[in-house]
Image 1: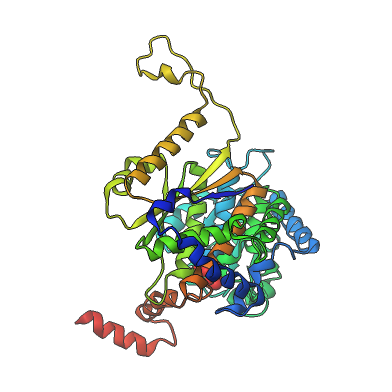
Image 2 (image 1 turned 90 degrees about the vertical axis):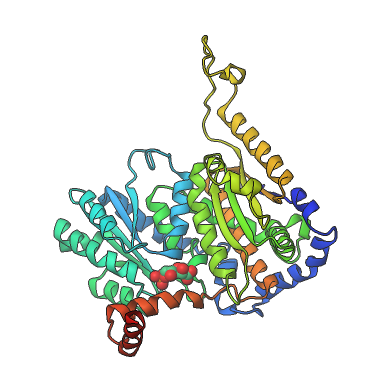
Length: 447
Ligand code: PA5
């Protein structure tokens, strides 16, 4: 099972801190359960996994089959919650060098619509110009500029390259049931489409078609992913004792540290495949908690790689940080350190050992060094990187986020701050409807 160890934070918080937080944590879980907290119209993710209908999974798998049969490359167009979840799961499960080599039949999954870089889009369109490609266009609002811009280019290229008829078959929309340009376009063009439920926000949407379709196209078992999440649902209800509830324990631990002045949480992995899981986690916690002048700043590092860059800061910089380490118990493959007669590199003391044993000692050595250096350490152990355990981890973090946001005293399900840059960008670009803002912003930058 997924285990959470908070023993290495104890010396940094008052002895009673976790006990003191217990009623607040329980109250937060109850609010999530009975829908009486702030943002309660966006808590559909709470029981999404256990309520996922077989018919929906069948339909997702059927659409995935069509894309797999007809595409060498599938491009997921989306930003924020509309791409990070699927990217996190696909990268965590994929071969580091050859994506989805399991049966040699999986299309390559690429991502677009999460930046506005002309070079990125040029290079992508060049890369796919001789390939049979399809598109999954994902946008809950259906109006996000980054995604809409990439989709406009890719749709045209797909129609030009593959013909309108085939394009219609290999373009899929995942969007709101009624509103937004992506819905209008899907209905007009007759694309296959899936709905993002009204009561699930972008960053909590990985277990809806938003995440499930790209993951299924990549060749992974979405039923196991959903099962893992559903099982974690059962382990994190208000009836489970705090010490047996990993989401509640995680929320309590990080809030205890925050109240003690630890303002930055660094999510640490020792497996490079988890890089995008951290990116997903940063959005989840950053957008949910960073508001009203409050919130832990979520950062991330990949170890041991970043021990050679950020390691110095973490060991000896300002003591306002704590670490949460995702530790993977069992690796998938076996590589032993070979013996070498000359031993020029002096590594014969490791001969015959698994590389993972070296990695685990790096992990333990780092934990001890960082705790000695004043960095509290929460450790989350995941048995293995497969669909089931990743499903559990995703739900644990989602639930931990909802609990944590309520304990912090914010609405974890809105993101009003995300609009500020968009308003300025539209005013600067002269978008119709932004005439007044345009005048104001142009006179401001002229000064
Ligand atoms: O969490 C969120 O709601 C946001 O980060 C969105 O996921 C992101 O802005 C993309 O929005 P949309 O899916 O509407 O294009």
